[in-house]
Image (cartoon, rainbow, N blue to C red; front, side, top):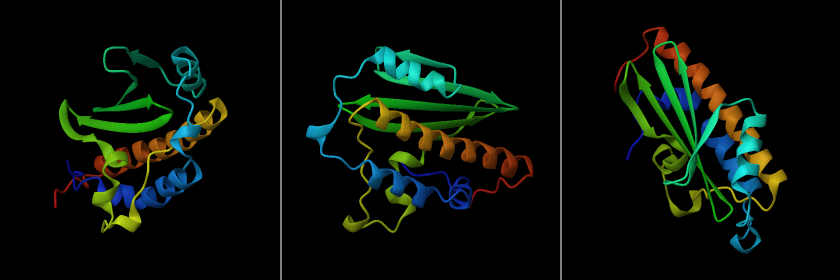
Length: 160
């Protein structure tokens, strides 16, 4: 999966690569240190503390935030498996899918990727780590949403 070229300038504008790499480095713990036995309900409450309406998809094992702004729908999925945080964005405009997966899992396509650039998923050891990871992730997400709306509403939607 590749990133829709519409989003590359937006990700560059919000300094996504640096911010996500910093998050990855800050929470680059060994898996043996991870908080595998976290409470699903506690994680749900932590996400709600940030002001989001969130649901938990038990079958697929992820938390889901859906927001509608104007004619856009943003979905932010959060997977917390084995104490690892995986973040997935999906964006629709007028029910047309523009991007799925988002840059989190596709950062290597934003970089001239080589093994030295490898960016790992953040690992949390406790609820405080999880709160900090989510705080930074939501900050990036909010900047992304704001820039999508600003850019696309100006008619800057040119596919390269």
